[in-house]
Length: 552
Image (cartoon, rainbow, N blue to C red; front, top):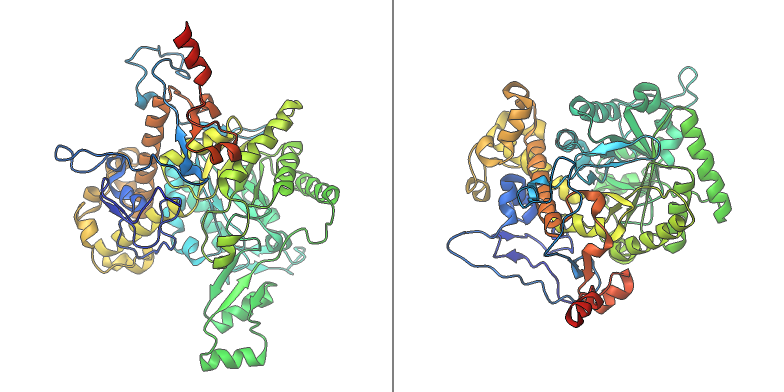
């Protein structure tokens, strides 16, 4: 099958270190990478990566017009030669107002309470992995400064050795102290400015430990709580790898599944001899005691009612790339429960530690899952239901991914969830900060002793390297800028590039606000994609109206 992305992009001057995914990222994205894929380089130079390099010396031509297979890269974006829609009331449809910087990217989601976001993007769930812990400041502060939702993933409290879980006082085995969870929430809230949200996710262990009760007691409705059914990268619970026998025993005592079992004498002997070098900690599957759709629905509604009863005003749901029945359940139950957002994660996304062949082989690919989500949402809408707002996830990294997925799910999609793509600026920024300030290298989890050639080609200091630095400094002031990690600056820079690219695509489609995007703004590049998505083939779109013009 022909792929849109190869290891090198001569037009942009980018190069992938490893094999390339459908998203344009490497299959294995390393925190210590010296570059320079498109997302990596965009985190420094921003909007410059929207255009071919070496202006004045080159011409450039597309190499992605022959679409093979079914994927988001086999969708193409419609353009129009006349008209405009979605301009603000103070603008006219003159050429002076119909320019791409005037495209509004603001969006909102929610049932009774609307949560605003500066652009239609949110992070994936960043949970108990070491990556999430080490680079949290970059992810959280960057997301807050941009003004988008950031999600704290599962198991953060359970894996924290400094957290305390009952049975003190009347807590009945619930959390009484959660320093890592507190750090993550408070880091985001420090820079929250009315756009975006901090979302805290629950799995089986989190529910048992009382994460919801702890969060609402301490933070009230400053946080959104998220129920988790699954994700696109795997069809079992989350997992991490630990290299300490003592820590493995701690996690087993906390109630997790640890493989191999660190409490067995033969396993301990194998670890001491070096045959066993690490342990995998796994979460549990949910809903194993529910065997019918009606029982799942009853349990779900009871859970939502309980969470509202303890004080949560905003509740969301995250589901994975299960089959059509589970997809329908997620959309129907979330709609009936008047949830604020449903994130639908398709296969083809990424992870920190999913079983590799499971990730390759299980579940419904993103474009097919999202196409069916639109179909099912439309069925409920036709019945007069106020369909839950949705976010699509699963292998997105670029501005055209944002446009295509918003259009495919329109009018129900309000956000697009990005996982690995938004981690790259965190890695890059930390590495740059650690190289420039060696005394801070360990604190920021930097992996470089010095700046590599790929960065020196851009600059030597933060204000030279990050094109978003000065805009952010203007907003924050010089003193506060000293507290902003370089990874957050890189994230801010990448988001600006994605936002600008999305504005340009929307202006070309003559849509100047997000709520004007429809499925008519995309078409399929091949017949197979048209069949699977319901998006007409390029030669069929407006074909009849074209003939009317000819026959007039």
